[in-house]
Image (cartoon, helix red, strand yellow):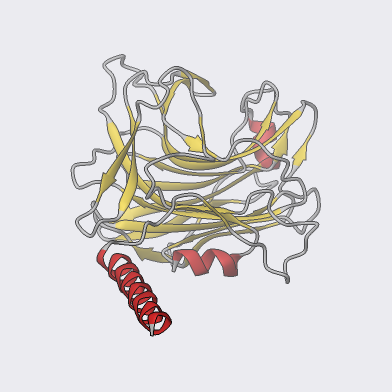
Length: 323
């Protein structure tokens, strides 16, 4: 009789504990951890896979694996915000003289975070992110870069392989960069002709219209008829960028840029033809990078929102996270 009562008591206790756990699980939201490692699919060639495979949604409000391109401002430019639906994003602000340094166009200002340097030679890298210009955002009549895939050399003075830039108060979208050259020399026409690749869009009302393109080895930007165009976003709306690249001295290299799943740059060919200099690695960065005001008055603060920063080895995996 005593054993029977004890069994009933233990069974009742266990059931109460189970019910309590179920209540706790469904009563509190599941924590979405920030940085996570993304598995490389079996179908990806292990020799050419990306050296990074991670996803960062900023929900933990910590940077973890990401590196600040710090030239004196530290973590000050980076704040975490939250949408009405509870989503956490990273707000990055560039200010007059913040993280200032010298560039090919003179003094530059920046507020960037990135992957840190790794070897990407003969590697296929796909990365993406969501970006939003707040409703009170003000463009400038100058260069504003929001991301770059930067092949870095000691004493580097050239453009990244891929940069996404805005000019002329946000009316020109400029995509591309340098596929090679002497990394220790500033921009010059001879090297730009041989190594520069560019695709440019002009904003016309609610559309972006393709109007110029420069291929590797071409003298000038080719004026296009504007038969390719895509819809523009309003301030305050999220935009999704997906970017695929392969650093290669052969013709199997490529640079592909998708904006809201529309292919807006599609380059195939040599992407890594550098002569001289010491290669330090490649850094993938997000965040505003701009020229300083040449008049000395200072450009206004510019805050840009970023979310769902991901770097992987294939587009199928990238789509899985960003679609």
